[in-house]
Image (cartoon, rainbow, N blue to C red):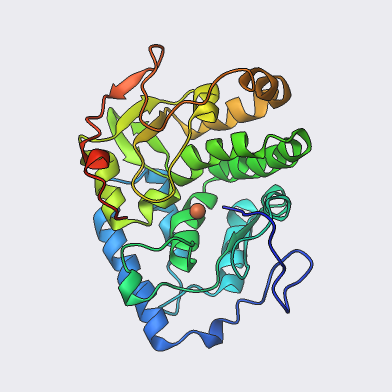
Length: 288
Ligand SMILES: [Fe+2]
């Protein structure tokens, strides 16, 4: 996700990108990628959306270790016209949206240490590339993320970035999808987290609620632990269509008159898939 009031790193381009400098990564850093990749791919076979699992092939490079962004971008470009570019860390919202609107996905340029295996606050290459890039090989999701970037540019002009960011959070980062009567995960924040890949589907604690665009944009979210509510889409086609067909300006104006919804609240009009106990959140245990 993008941040605010940031200074451009020395050496970064005007669009905040930096060279990936792939040769700089140590054997230990490449080994960390391989370890995380193996662990997650073993776990996700019957948990992640088929589109995500199919897209994993784009990450299977000839050399082991952290993917080389030039090679990765060549592959993605042929499939859906997307590229992956490196940035030094958080970037301003308008720069983030500009990249997405032009089919460039920005990735952090560091990888977690063994001590951070299961939790880190700032997105690293594993989160950004393993979590996000496979779905960029899917034509429908690829269009959705570009549409989100274009929507972000409009939201910026309307002062509604925070509201739109909830759509990103509850779909791109933490979305669930219904498939053949079961739930599957597709959000990057889930698929890149060993613990949340299990929690999001199996735990009794969180609410799982049918996706509703306005409802999602009224809902707060948490950045410090597993989500207390997940939203379930029926298909990427539906998500893309609704994003393209909605005139967000009047929606933002309308939602400004309504209160936010707390992270664990279930509303009377919600289409509840499973009502959570919130037992995990009440224990106040921090993990990822
Ligand atoms: Fe992310």
